[in-house]
Each structure stands twice: as C-alpha cells, then as structure tokens.
Image (cartoon, rainbow over all chains, first blue to last red; front, side, top):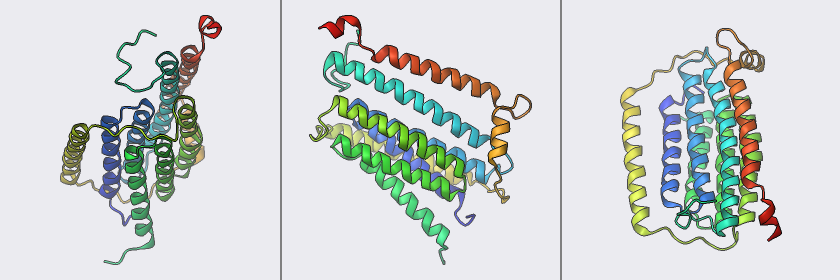
Length: 104
Length: 174
C-alpha cells in the first residue's frame, strides 16, 4: 500500500485531467464534451482522496469534498442533458458550432 | 527492484483508467465513447478500492456508473444516430489541443515533482459512523451547512431540469 509513492497517483490524476481537457478542446458534439468534463471532475476526486490518505490520514475532509463534488457533478450532468435535449428539439442538432444563437 | 502485488495492481488499474479515458475522448462513435467512459469510471472505482476507501468506491459505482453514464446513454439514444461515426475533428484543432494538453501536463507534472510531497506515514482511518456523524454535525468539523446547501442545489437542479426539458403546450400541438 505505502510502497506506491503519492506522486504516482498524482501522475494518474493529472494525466486524466489533461486527457479530459484534450477531449473538451477537440470534440464538437455536446454529449462527448460532457463526457470529457466528467473525466476532469473524476481526476479531481482522485486527488482529494489521495491527499487525504497520504498527507492528512487523521482527518476525513477529502472524503467529504469528494462526496459533495460527486453530488454536484450529478446535478450538473442532469441540467446539461436537459439543455442538450431542449436544444436538439429546437435545432435538430447538438453540435456546438451550429448552436450560435441561443434564443430558446 | 522487486514489485509487490499491490504495486502491480496499482499500475494495472492506472493503465486501464488512462487507456479507457484516452479512447473515450478519441473514438469517433459516440456510443463507444460512452462505453469507454463507463470503463474508465469503473477503473476509478477500483482505484478507490485499492486505496481502501470503500465507501467512496461504492458511491462512485452507484452515482457515476449507475446514474450519470446511464443518463448519458439515454440522451445519446434521444439525440444521435448511435451507429454512425462523427466527423473527424479538424487537424489543426487536434494538434493545437494536443500541444495545449501536453504543455499543461508537463508544467503540472514538473510542479508536482519539485514539491515532493512527504507522506505522513500514519495509517488512514475512517469509518462509516464518523462520516455519518460528521456529515450532519453542527459543531466543529461538522458539515451540516454544506449538506443542506447541496440538498437545496439538487432540488433546484431537478426542478430546473424539468422546466428546461418539458414541452410547452404550443410545441405539443404542432
């Protein structure tokens, strides 16, 4: 358990964050952009748990932050998908380039 | 250097997470992207199990794998032709995004290595009971206020989703 140093876990979370960033920059479909955001949020959660476990093992604040981030991510995904479905109804497309005017 | 089983498992899980994540953002079929995202999230749950934070691992499986990915798959079925491949992103954009991601990664990794985090060496202790009492505690180290704020946020998000996604009467008649 303690044989794996902390910065190896940080490597994984950093790499995952920038994979998410790459996806966010290259994708033009709103659902796949949402997936990239989920990857980025998850990399942050890994960081919180790893710091909590390795640096402050007597506290539990990282666990609570992770729980709250997961709750907010769920709310964010639900609102985003509602907006995407509404956009699809009015524009018949969920490409960000085609959604240039946001009237309804 | 001899690698222990725990180390080998960690590196396997990490490779799985990163590989699935990379495929999730590069594959051109949107349904496959969702499935790769699902695998990546399961890998992250496995990483939490490896770190012996079973509660967060369970929450990860329930909320992400059971909730958000299913929601994403439903919205794919509602808005996309799941079988057809998406257009390839423009080459210039791919190169620019790759350079930005690599530079950002290099910078962050340099900072992490320079800082050299010192592990405290103590064992990590948590229990379901402490999570429960601390989550609803109002005294020191209590999280009652954020808990209530998040519950209000979830309620307003649900109401907002219904308001946004509902069909108006005029739309339904058309």
